[in-house]
Image 1 (tube, rainbow, N blue to C red):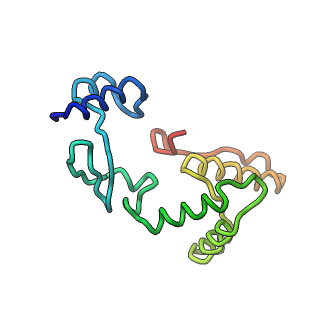
Image 2: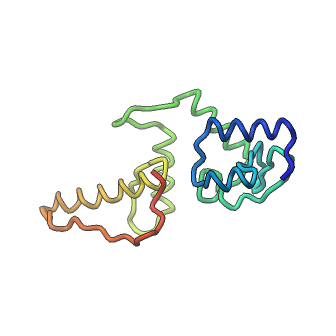
Image 3: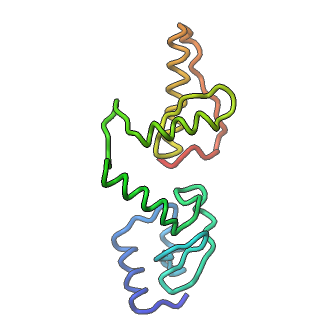
Length: 156
């Protein structure tokens, strides 16, 4: 990869000021990494050199519907202006609407949801709910959880 002067400066600043997640520092320095992404549209991202890439990682992060979705950005903006945060023990109209929609489309008799921001929180919450369920039934001996060693359960 041949970097412009500006691109090289950005790369050096990233190595100086960022701790890059899931990257090997030695190979990053040798290979001219990190790749600096400047934008995205649909399933493609564009790097600081103008190269277009298919983003094969976006689906398991927050862009599983693609980049550049103005209707999503507008809805998020409107909600941030109206109510960017609400304390525990309270809720919002969009949260209630989402929970109702999830109950309608979820198979079986599942009717409640617990909104979280990621997979780690979802797994932790599922464990807590399962344990609380058995405690309320006075079945304290049911506390073990089975998981697959080496499987992905979140990054926190």
